[in-house]
Length: 457
Image (cartoon, rainbow, N blue to C red; front, side, top):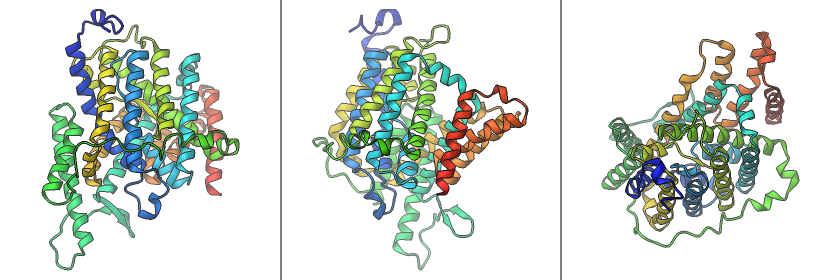
């Protein structure tokens, strides 16, 4: 094992790698609660929840997908990077694909599987570099920033910190619960909003103090405080056999053989969006974490084909199990900071995700107030990419700004993506720099234009 993971070459040992693996797992552990919450439509009205997979089944799918993905990265990619269903992609799955586009969740999983299959082919053939070069840098970062704002908005809405308003569309929620005449549901909503604000403040403090696993610890503290004040139900146990995977396992296959469903305009947009977001998210994460670990050679990822293939295969496995795209997690930087340098770190992460399957009764404490701080702060981390947009060049800045703005305002990642990709070629042509636009961008211009025409229907 030492020889395979090159401990001597990397200057590491079992103790350091195990500590790093535990650190990375704790930093990622919030996904076990947040991903099932998102994909099951837990925050949606009861009449809409029937259109989503069961929470318990998605929990099992999440844990297994994270375990498989991390172990693939351990043995194939041999990098200290954990993998799990990606934040942002699960929001696109739930709120855009299923809720807005009204695509059945089983068909959406088929879209995830297909996009990851394409990703695998691109990784094995080396086409990845060419595609990365085709997309303008500003738009790459704008997509990540826009998804960050969208996720943060979802967290604020779920917690009741931001509420609907007939006059102004949105407004600040109510935080007082002692006025006379308030209805019981209004009092409960105000208390939950305050609990979410408390959790947000606690988690931010932990992050500023650079506490490892700050988001996970923040969720635990918020849940405990919620139980003390009667806002969160006590779990009925600690250990239990893993929930059944039957409701979601293999659900994607019923649509993979249906050509009319797979090759519709709607599915084309779904597959392209899943592919695009995962493609660049995985690229940025792998390069960033490897750079922090000092593993880059001439600014290039070691064994890039293996690393990206691990990511793609993990996504395919996750789709079969019943979850949105599995991808590399930037939280792996916590483990690298703790000394992780080899794939053994990722192996430890995978093992811990398997063990977590037996602690699912604890997820009874997961409410919107508990998950909201995690969503908001993940949004903050993703939105940091906004600084990398060339704001002094309007031809670059406006498409990026439109991408970022439209995602939260239209409650659709795909709409924001389409807006930016349509506007970019137009801005360049008007500026007299049409030749600077890669031919692939003109193809995407047509694809997303068709997407908007379809939406009007």
